[in-house]
Image (cartoon, rainbow, N blue to C red; front, side):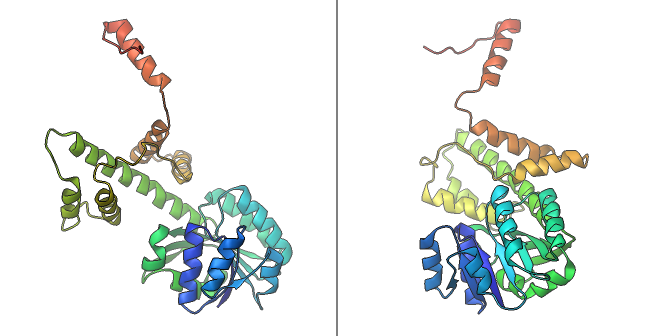
Amino acid sequence: MKIGFIGLGKMGFNMVHRLLNSQHEVVAWDRLPESIAAIEKLGATAADSLPDMAAKLPGRKVVWMMVPAGKPVDDTLGLLLTLLVKDDIIIDGGNSYWKDTRQRAEKAAIYGIHFLDCGTSGGVWGLQNGYCLMYGGEKEAAAYVEPVFRSLAPENGSVYCGPSGTGHMVKMVHNGIEYGMMQSYAEGFEILEKSPFDLDLTRIAETWQNGSVVRSWLLDLAVNALKADPKLAQLDDYVDDSGEGKWTVQTAMDFNVPAHVITASLFTRFQSRQKESFAMKMLAALRNQFGGHAVKTKE
C-alpha cells in the first residue's frame, strides 16, 4: 500500500522505517528537512509540503498523522481536508483525547473523508518489536488500512475497538494503567534502596524477570536502566506526563469510576516537579501548632 505519513519524530520515523521494511511505499513529510532526508535514504519518497505529499499519493489516499495532540492535530487536519477528497482516509496515530477525536471525525465526515483514531504503543522499541495498535472509526475504512496495521503490529498486536474515539480511549486507559504500574515499581525499588541491606537491585530485578508474578516488559526496561546506572545517580527526580494520565482520571470521574491508583500516580508526578512544596510547609506548621511537633527551618 502507498501511504502518506506526517511526523517523523522518535516514533514516527521508526514506524515509517518498519513500513518500508514490509514493502509499503511511504510519502513522508516533517517540519524538519533533516528528518525527511534521513527517511528518504531508507527508501521513502520525500515530500516538501503537505500539498506535495497529497499530490504524490494515487487513487484513494491514506494519510497517517503522527503529531502532538491538540492544536497540531487540528491544524494538520484542517489543511488535509482541503487536499483530500471523498472516501480518502486520515489516521491520527498520536495520543489525542478521545472526545476531541469524535469531534474531528464529525468534521471530516462533512467532507466525506474518513477519520480513524489509532492508539499506538511501543515507544522507541517499536521498530524491532512492532507496535501495539488500538484503532477505531468507520469499519470499512479501517478494513481498507488493515495491511498497514498488520505490518506495524506484531502478531495479535492490533485490535479494532469500534466507532470513532474508541481507539484513543482504549490507548488512554492503557497509558493510565501504565502510570500505576510504573509508580508501583518505582515505590517498591525505593523501599529496597532505602533498606539497611546492601541489596543488588539490578540482580533482584533480573531475578524477578523469571517466573515472578510481577515480571513484565516494564520490569525489563527497569533492568536496562539499572544496568546503565545502578543508583540512577545521573537522573533528576522530575517526572513529566504526556496528558494521557490526566485524561484517564477525568474520564474516570465522568464515568463515576474510582481510579485510586492511577489518580495517585498522576499526582505523584505533579509532586516531583515541585522544587518547594507550600503544602508540605503547611502540614509541618499545623503539626507544630497543635502538637508542638518539631519543624525544620532554613538557615
